[in-house]
Each structure stands twice: as C-alpha cells, then as structure tokens.
Image (cartoon, rainbow, N blue to C red):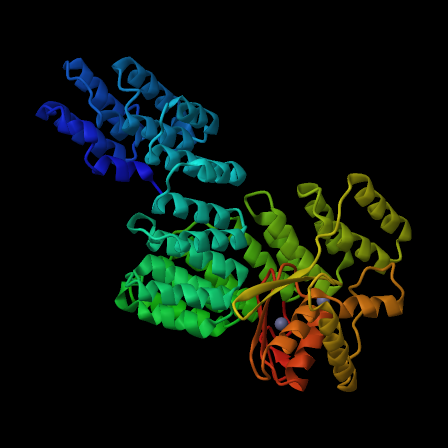
Amino acid sequence: MRATTKLVSSTHPSLHLSHPTPEPFIWNTLIRAHAQIGAPPNISSFSVYLRMRFQGVKPDFYTFPFLLQSCSSPSSLQSGTKIHAHILHSGLSSDPFVQTSLINMYSDCGNLNSAHQLFYEIPRPDLSSWNSIISANVKSGSIVAARQLFDDMPERNVISWSCMINGYVKCGDCKEALAVFRNMQALDGEDVRPNEFTMSSVLSACGQLGALEHGKWAHAYIDKCGMKVDVVLGTSLIDMYAKCGSIERARRAFCGLGSDKDVMAWSAMISALAMHGHGEECLNLFSQMQDHGVKPNDVTILGVLCGCVHGGLVNEGREYFDRMSEEFGLTPMIQHYGCLVDLYGRAGLIDNAWDVVRSMPMKPDVLVWGALLSGSRMQGDIKTCEFALKQLIELEPLNSGAYVLLSNVYAKMGRWEDVRNVRYIMEAKGIKKVPGCSMVEVGGVLHEFFIGDESHPESRQIYLMLEEIMKRLKMAGYVGNTREVLLDLDEEGKELALSLHSEKLAIAFSFIKTTPGTPIHIVKNLRICVDCHVAIKIISKVFEREIVVRDCNRFHHFRYGSCSCKDYW
Ligand code: ZN
Ligand code: ZN
C-alpha cells in the first residue's frame, strides 16, 4: 500500500490559500514523470530538481513528495537523505504532506529508526502520518509496535485497518487478522468500510488458516457489498478456495474471471491444481494459458513443476524445467531447482537429484536439502539422509525436526552413540520439538488440537470417540505403524502416542460435531505421518466420510479408503 500516491493526488489544503505559479507545476510534473520511470534519482528526477533550482524556481509542497517517490529501495537511502536535507533547507519540513512522504521514503529504504524519529517530531500527526508509520512498522515486520501505534491513534480509516489486517497476515498470525477484521466490521462509517485491498488480505488469512467457512463468508460479503471481483480479488479467491481444500470452488472463481485473466490468475489456478495433485489437469491448463497468448512467469513454472512433483510426472517435469530458460527466457531460481530435486527424490532417482544439487548455480537452501532428505528417506538411502540432515542443521541450527530425524536415522543404523550425541546437542542448545497441531473449523469456529491435547472443554467426549474410532479401525485390519515414532518409547507407548496425534483428535471432534456424511477439512502444521495417513484412509472407508487434510506440503483427499496423493507425499 503506497500512501504517498494517494496523498499527492488529492488537493493539498494549503493550496487553497496560495496560488501556485505554473512554473513549479511544470517542473513538478517533470519530476514526477522521472520518478515514476524508476530511474535512479541522482540521474533523473533529482537532476530535474537541480535544474529547477538553478533556474531560480522555488519548490512547493508537491515537489518533494514527487521527488521522494523515486527513493523506494534501500539502495536509494543516500539520495533520500540528500533530499531530506534539501527539504530542511527549503523550510517545508513542517508540511504534513512532506512529512508523510519522508516517513514513507525512510520506510521504503528500510530505515525504520529515521521514520520513527520523523514521526515523533511531528507535534500533531495527521491520519496519513499515523498510517505511514504503522505501515512502516508492518513492512519491517514489527507487528507488535504497529499494533501499539494502531491502538494509540486517535482516529482510524480503512487504510489503517487494512494495513493492520495485512500486517497480521504477513507475519502469519491469521487468527488475529480475522479478529481485527471483525472489530473493523463492528464499526459503522463510510471511511471504515472494507475495500478490495482489505478483502484480499482477509481472503489470504482464510486461505492460510484453511478456514473454508470463513472464506465462503468473506466471498459472500464481497458480493453483498457489490465489490467488483477484478483480477486481483479473483486471484485471491482462487488461492483461498484452493488452500481451503475446495478445488471445485477455486475452478468456479477462475472461470468467473472470464477473459480478464492475467498471468497471476492463471498461475494461481495452475498452483491450485498442483497442490491438490491434479498433475495432468495442471499441465493442460498450462498449455491452455499459452493458447490464450499469456506469457508464463517464474510463478507459473513453479506451479507447473509442483504439479509434476505431486503427480509423479518425472519426464514432464524435467522437460518443463529445460523449457523454462530455452523457450520462455526465464532464469530458474532456487525454488525451481528445489522442485527438480524433489521430483527426482520422490521417484527414487537419488543420483539424478544429487546431480541437480551439485550443478545448481546457487548454494542449496533449506528447501533443497529438505527435498533431498524426503527422497532419500523414502528410498532408505541412509547416507544421503544423514548428509542432507547435517546440511539442514547447519543452515537452521534450531530446527528441531532435523535433529529428531537425524537421531531416528542413526537409530535405524544402530549407531546408538550418535543417537545419544544428537539428543545431547538438542538438550544443550535448548531445542524443543515443534508440537504437531491440527486445526478444524466447525460451525464457523476454528478449533486447534495438539498431540495428546486435553485442554479442549469437550476433551472427555473426544477421547471416548477416539477410542471408538480406533476400535473400529482395528476391526477393519488396522495395525499402528510405529516406525516413525521417537525411539525411546516401548511398543505399546508408541501405539498410544500414535493414536493421540492431533489430526486423529480433530477427526474425533468433527465426528461428534457434524452429521454423518459431512466432509471434514483439517489443516496440519507438519507433514502427516505414515500412520495417520493409513488410519485416515481406513476411517474414510469405514465411516464413509470424505476427509481433506492439508499438511505443510500438500493436500490429501481421503475417500473410499484411498488418498488422492496415491501414497506419494
Ligand atoms: Zn500422525
Ligand atoms: Zn495422501
């Protein structure tokens, strides 16, 4: 959100008093034109400014905001500071428009301290200055400080509210984003009515949470308000529905865009199909997109590659990766290499995966090593496993998952000394396991469950139901798969630990709260374990329920005893 653009396009209050001569107007127009091209300020807009001064024309209230627009990245901080000096010299530094533009400039250039300093120097900051400083904090990830300012400000408009909602979405606290949105709605007034930008953030929050009911409600709200679903909002809808597990609704939102679809909308739908494991359809859509004359970008190709990964389409994946640079003129980024490693790893072609890792032009990151790890684990290639894990730990010394896996790998090899070592390091560094958490939305309310959780008010009934479910599963031939459980538990303990996994608790709760036949949507923060995967497959058959689980990697649609991932995740 760029507050500056809005500010300068409205009429400055002081201008009613003084009549600007045409001369600064022309210079300002020139400065703005140069600033908008995005050329470095010292050689374009700033040189126009210098010529203006040279000709004896005094800058006015518009000159500096326009000039500052050209400083929008950390590399232009020096130029921005220089302009700031000119502002102080010109005597315009107490003008609210100029002050707000300066706050925005320092924020865009990544200097939050200076932005704060400027803000606190303003005796009575106006709404725009408040919004700018909140936005500056949001941009730098200081959400707590942003909230403090938001709570302190004397009045708020739609920009303030949207900025806060967007801030919470960006830092991953989507529940709080929705809570702020609810507070916003409780207000009545023209300037606090949610706009397209607000709704796009709200949809994104629903998507991240996997809260389908909330998302459907937000969609209905957009329609009710008569907001035009343009390509941006439409893309947000596609993304939200896909992440909430409703590929059908995502398709409808995509079709609803008619001929308005741009590359982002196509890419969103391609990624949606990929996430849900519809590999073939994903590739079909990609060729349709090209038939429509839309040029793919790197997001599109990433979606296509993910489609190949989740659909197990090895040759196709390699082909698209090669076409990326040869045909579309795009340079593969680290994510694309990560996909390629994943593609080979899952297909059991560990040597090919290694070739990619060795030949990539950049240093492999966590995702690349993670992909190699998954592949080698699945294939039982312990050596590669160990190597990838060590790299992961080096990159993320506090990643508990990697340590746990490494100790399990050593245990499998019977290297008990190493197992103890890993545990010792974890303890010494104070690393704790990230607890598995599953979320389920029932009756428009989100319920969270952790492993072995007993904090839910209806905990007793949930455990009774779980017991009942496990009994029926065992009758249907289910045996707990204890291979992936931490090794210091005995067999019985292992099986018990498995039955308490958060997704099983969430399913038991949904069984209590919903009528038979209602599909269940669960969002899990970690990768679903082998045992839960087996168990849920049987549950879907025995209880005739469609269960959709989104884990941190992909979607699993369980129906009639099998999963859409074809046990390949
Ligand atoms: Zn599990
Ligand atoms: Zn699955």
